[in-house]
Length: 149
Image 1 (cartoon, helix red, strand yellow):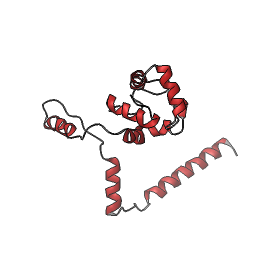
Image 2 (cartoon, helix red, strand yellow; image 1 turned 90 degrees about the vertical axis):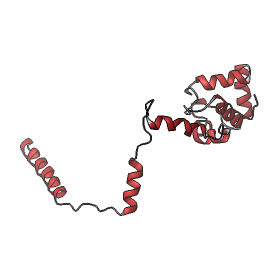
Image 3 (cartoon, one colour; image 1 turned 30 degrees about the vertical axis):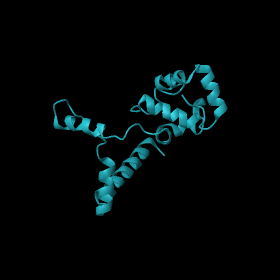
Image 4 (spheres, one colour; image 1 turned 90 degrees about the horizontal axis):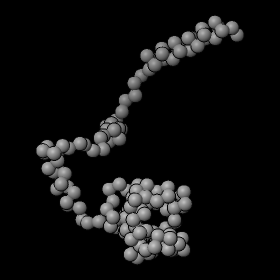
C-alpha cells in the first residue's frame, strides 16, 4: 500500500468517526446518575481568608471535635496501606519483635514517636496523616505496636 493510499484511508476513517459522533444520540442521565456525578465533581473544600465569614466559622468547626482520634482510627485511615503489608520495610501491625527492635534502636518511645513525626526511612512526616496531632501519631504507634509510652 502506498503512502498516499495510507493517508487517504486514515482520513476516511477519521472522517467516519467524526460523522458517527455528530449523529450519535446523547446519553440521557436519570436524576440519581446526575446526583452521583455532581457528588463526584463537587469541590473538596474551599479557601477562607481572614476576615471572611467562612474563616470565622472554620474555628468553630475545629473546636467542636471530640478530642484526639484513636490509634485504631488513625491506623485504619492512614497507616494500614504500609503497616499491614510491610511495604518498603514498614513494621507490620502486631509484629511486637520488630517494633521492640525499632524501639531499642530509637532509645525510648518519645524518640520513636519523634521519628514518626519527622519521618523515617520511606515514611514521610506523620506518614500520610498531615493533620494528625502528635498525640494521635502516638496513639497509632501504640495501636500498631502494643508498646506504651
